[in-house]
Image (cartoon, rainbow, N blue to C red; front, top):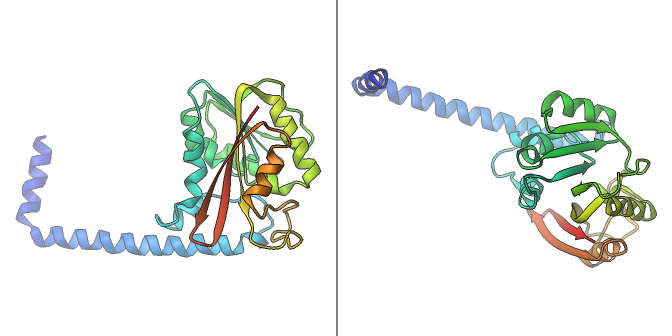
Length: 242
C-alpha cells in the first residue's frame, strides 16, 4: 500500500511523463491490433490453399473484437453443458474450443479428429487433465453405447455424403445417454444444390428445412437456430435428442 502511494505521488508530480507514456501505450496498442488484423485476415484468405482441413482459431483472436462470430459455438455449447457431463467433440480440429472453453464445465472430454496434425497441435497447445485428444475417423470408429451426455459436431456434417452422414448420426445417437444431446452446426448455402462451394464438402444444405429434414431421419427432437455473420455467411446451429 505504501509502495502504491509513492507511485501515485510520483505520477502526480510528472503529468507530462504520465501523458507521454499513456500516449505511447495507446499508439503501440493500435499498431499491434492493426498488424494482428493483417496477419489474421491473410491466414483466412490463404487457408484454402494451405493444405489443411482444420482452422487454427488463434488467428481469429488477431482479427479484432468485431470478429466475434466464431465464438458462437463456444457459448452455445457452454450454455448446455452440466458440470458432470462427458462430452465427445467430433472434428475437434485445433482443439481450442475444448481446451479454452468446454474444459471449464465438462467433467471429461474426448476430442477426436481424423487429421493427425490437428491432434498433435491440440495436444501441444490445449492439453488439460480432463481432455483426451485422439486421432479417430468417426466414419470408422464406433462410439461406445450410452456413454456421452453431449456430442458436438460443429462444421462437420457437410463433409460427409448424405448416406455417410446418416450413419454418423446413427452412431452418435447410439453413443448418447438417455437424456443426451447432439449439438452442432453447418453453414446454410445460397446456391443451387449441385454447385458445391468447398471441395471438401459432400453435402451442403441450402435451407433450414432441408437440414431439419435430414437430422430428423435419425433424431426425434430437432431444434435449429440460424445466425448470420456480417451478412456474408449464415450458420445454422442444431440441438438434437432422442
